[in-house]
Length: 428
Image (cartoon, rainbow, N blue to C red; front, top):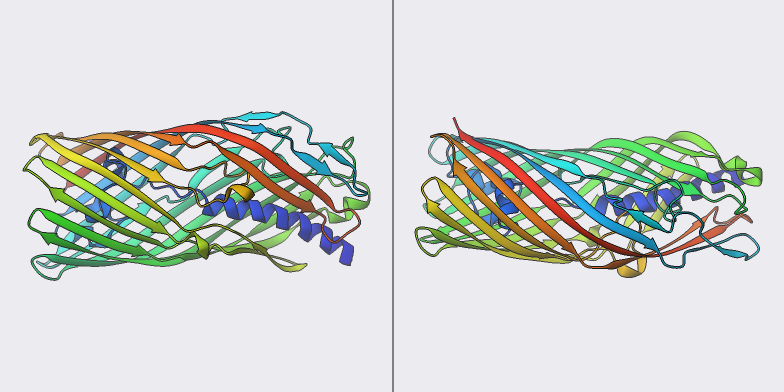
């Protein structure tokens, strides 16, 4: 019985390590079409419902307004093998077989946003917003060299935020928000049997859960200059679901399992500072910096009938920054542009194929047109230039048993991304 538990928990731990990296390493900032157009350089200091994700104070002095937007995200890339190996019991080492290159593993997707807000009297406002801060899929062929790290990775989140804001003085606004976030995940990977001549087994983890956090912010309006600052709390995630391990043969067959399990981890806090300077009646300059507390993601804790295991993580805190501009061509048309640098929190020495991530530059263009007296249309496009990076991921399957098998995955990553966004804003 002890051997069965070690085999089962070993496969689950390997899968959970990858799922944690998947959740923590791919924050989606596409929460505003207007923001995409200026590379997310002025959202914390802007007003209106479209800025609620960045600052709950944004609605303190805005009119009754609703917003809906959709951001299509398309990433092309190549993840290529660079000498990956598998070491079997007894010390025999062989190259990882299968397809040596995987193309476009990050699947195209849509990040939707919605927000609505209304004033309450002369000094207060309330709002509701829905965002998808983690929402993507990566998929590799069953014969890809990455299979001992990643096959399918699917994560969907929906964040519901209830916001209250107050106009404290003629120049100072404050706001607070409470967040409820629903998360669903499904992740799978292959598991090696004890000979390269045998087919692989498979491990799969699926789960869902509700989690809660908060946010607070303020804005200072000083003549032509507006400053904004906000803080979004770290969020503890607890997912309950099923763990499946199958296809293990011979002495490993005792590790096949289909049972309930859970995983818990913490996603980072986010601190944002920014400013907007209305240089002229037509030109506004934007600047914004964000500090991400990725070090909150210190471990993944996996619980099964065999017990609880903590898998250490090594994510690092990062700071992103962007600058941009808005230019009012006329009362019915505003153009915008911006550039942002956004470093990855994943250390090069431990990067997983589940998140083939790298430092990136984002270049955005956008526009807002006044369609009717109460309706505005936002459009935007962005290009993301990913810095070349590497995959370095070691996994020991069936650790603590005579069957211990280690995979050492080494690869290169190249890629680029595109974002196409459209949104509607309307007073009512």
